[in-house]
Image (tube, rainbow, N blue to C red):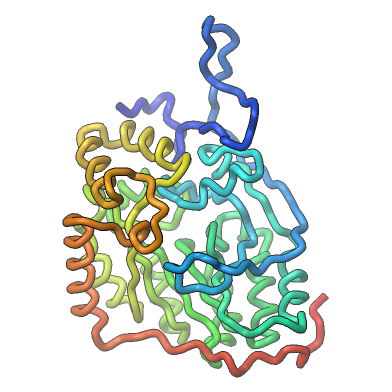
Amino acid sequence: MKNEDSYFSGRGAQIKTGNPFLKAEYVAEHIEGLDEPILENPTTQLFFETPKKIINKVESPDLAAQYSMNPYQGCEHGCIYCYARNTHEYYGLSAGLDFESKIIVKKNAAKILEQQLLHKNWKVSPIMLSGNTDCYQPQERKLEITRQLLTVLAMYRHPVGIITKNGLITRDIDLLQDLAKDNLVHVMISVTTLNENLRRQMEPRTASAIKRLKTIEALSKAGIPVGIMNAPIIPGLNHHEIPSVLKVAANHGALTAGLTIVRLNGSIGKIFEDWLLKNFPDRFEKVWNQICSLHGGSVNDSQFGRRMHGDGKIAEAIHQLFNISKKKYFDEKKMPSFNLSAFRKGGAYSLF
């Protein structure tokens, strides 16, 4: 049961999970009950790094994107289900509270992007911004690294896809309009639920559903092609909202809709289990068991194809509901194709 006195308001994860890459770690249990550290709601910390590359090749065969880039690692949004949480463990940090409070910033991202675009072996292909954590998370408001990346892409006329759940993207409408006039940009807004109570619990530092719909509308009116990701679908929590989410998104100007099924790999399973028990004890067993049924009896699923699509009767019902809804509300709509011919390598001056 959720205890308001000990629950960390504004955070998704309520625990600090162990790290399989560390030989030793701090724990909250002691065999003698002595010197037990007290877990507190952490303040956000920034860590700066200078990577040698920013464009990453996507190797997964069930992902449409060939390349991605991530200006940040970790995300203050605190979405409890986020598949990117496990990547924080590569830095020696926790996938739980550390992921949403210790943010790694790639401060030289725009400069490295330009260098990679100018490399003799680079062949133009849409880059997904971001493939891991949200490129418009709260720190972007002051750091503006995503805006710097878009400036480079616009200068070289390079195609880019963006996925976010933050209304901050409207700050960059000028750059997005410039890219859109040559069919160089697709934007996908993630809309998980229209239930504001669920949104606050599940995605504590994200924009409200109303804000996201207004963002879709603003982008659409500006001539920027925008769609939604109704993701992740969690049976017993938000699956029944699929028709209403797609309807309002279409009414606000979205051109397409996508879907993924929740999966809880690695430490995310423990983080989500703790959150579910504290927030929805009355339906914990139902939700947990239905998630397991989507992935061959486990919440952890790395099987390509099934991991984001799910399998079994519940998955089939979810996809059937989604497909019917998409046909009803998006039948006459589609995103324009990316333009790969506008890229002008070496045809512009350097920004740096």
